[in-house]
Image (cartoon, rainbow over all chains, first blue to last red; front, side, top):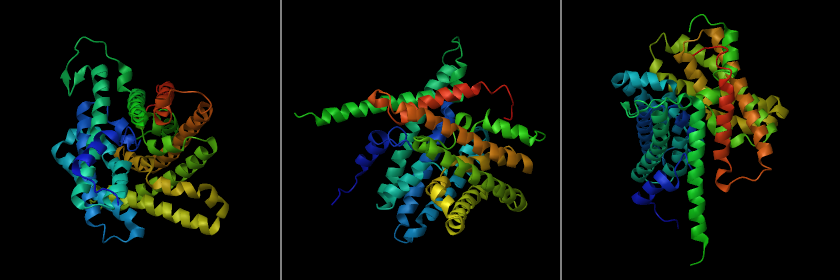
Length: 207
Length: 196
């Protein structure tokens, strides 16, 4: 019988060893689009973590009452409901942020991380641990977003969270434009893969 | 965004504001399916087809049903339902009447429901408040632009498979870096037409 997942293991997996963006390569659409400013990335990350956690919780709570063949539809509806909540919240309390993120808030629905967690974890586990799992994946996503946004914002605008850090440095215009997001994520994934390969080699060597 | 000619939007959607290179939409399947040129073209055609029809459908629903009744906040749910229902319908019709096409495109159709490019185009259409003809031009252009990108990437990757590479780069990382280079090339178009 498989070991019951515990809170610490689930957290560690979602944040690092099984990070949704770096290793599972899912949910990168929005990851690339909002990373030109750190504040945008932070808000997007929190929104995604909230939606993932709450929809995992709901899917898991309803898992014994959902007929198997319509479960995808049910999951999509649950996710959309939470995304609408987030959208209305942003519009009411942070209208500028809502404008900056634009359609990418709505695109949280098609972010494969949420569906993936609902399918792979929440469908077979108890509600509380599913929520933790969703939260962990969401924060794993946030960390990667912030890492990319940090490089892009400081080189593109010379600021961090809007605070001026490099007032005299030349602005690197490319960092504000789309291609840099691809390059940075590619390099970050390369680094992460190297780490993983190194770890696996170490594990295979006989002691 | 009122008096831009639909044809201009069509061209711009392919080149200057390409779905992948400037809006980052549909990346998941872009990375997963861009290994062979033939499969890439198949998926590209399926995406273009579904994208055009669902966007037009969503346009009609949004401006004729949601807008008059003040239900704009429901648009996420309605849009994703329209897309899922349309994909299901097309799948059933193809299976029943055009079997050849079903076997050619069938495996791609379920993938499309979760392709963010489809929902993304519908949302952009609302946020930029296009009129009907502009919506048609925009959706066809976006589909073709996406197909162009994934086909080009598949061509590069099928060559790349024969070359030796650092172990950590194989797969997604190198695909992203190549996409970055392609996006750089597409910036060259950006002075041509401007729709954003």
